[in-house]
Length: 363
Image (cartoon, rainbow, N blue to C red; front, side, top):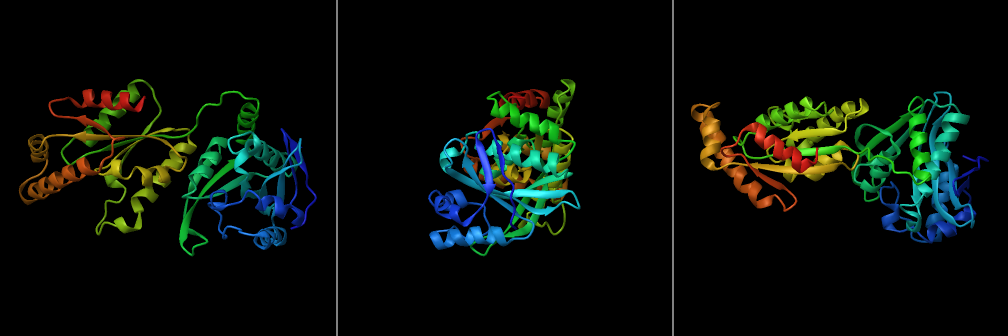
C-alpha cells in the first residue's frame, strides 16, 4: 500500500518505507531482532528487498522506516496494518529496531506518533497489537504501553520453521487513549511511570498441604486491607474427565479469566495448583504481560499431609490421594528450583502461613 504519511516528533521521524531503506535495515537485522516475525530472517540484500516489497504490496498496510530525526539514520521499521477506517480499527506491528535503540525513547515515541495519528486524525475506535506468545520482549513492550490484554488465539501464527503458535492480542480503545497518551508522554519526559504488570503469586504443594486453605487466608488478609486481587484455584481450570492436559486447557482458561480481571483493573493474581511452581513459565505466559512472579511451595511432613487428607477422604479414595501426595512431594522437592520459596505448614495456622506468603510476595 503506497502512502505519503510522515510522522515526526520526540526525536524520531516515520517516513514511507521505500526500497532505498533495505540496505540500512539489513545492517542491524539478525535472528534476535527478527524474533516473533512470521517470515524467515532476511539474510542478504535480496531477502530484505523482498521484505520491503511485500510491505509495500500488502493492502491495508502503511509501512514506515523509522529515522533518528537528528541524524537521518534508519533505526527501524513499523507499520499500520489491517487498516479498516470504515470500521474504525487497525493494528500496529511489523516492528523491529536496531538493538542500539532498544530501551531508549524510540519505541514509545513511535507508538505515540502512530496512535496520535490513528485516534486523532483518522478517528479510529481501536488500535490493536498482535504478538507471538513466545516473544516476551514484545509482550513486555506492549504491556508497558498500557494496552489491555484481550486473549490468546490458538494456532493463529505460522512460524518460519513451519510450526504453529498462538497470538496474544492487546488493544487500546479510544476512551483509553488519553491515559495511554499521558503515560507515553511521561515516559518520554523521563518521569517515573508505575509498573503496570501483573504480580502473579503461585502457591503449590502436595495434596494435604493446605493450598486452598492458605489461599483463602491470603484472600481474607488482602480483603481486610482492601487490596484488589483475584484468587484462582488452578485445579479447577481443567477439572474434567478425561483430563485434557495435553491440550493446555488450564493455561488457556487462566488467560481468559485473567484477561477479564485485568480489564477491570486487577493486577494481583493468586493461583493455586499442585505443580504450579514447576510451570511458572507456562502460567506467566498465559497471564500475558511478563508478570512479576513469586513461587511458593508449601511443605508438610507425610504424617501431617496424611492426617489432613484423612479428614476429607475415605477408603480407596484416601489411599489413592495419599499415594499421589507422596509422589508429588518427592517430585516437587526434586524439581522446584532455588527461586521457589519453601514454606512449611506443619503445626501452623493458615493465617500464619498466609502472612508469610504475602511477605514473600511483597504484597
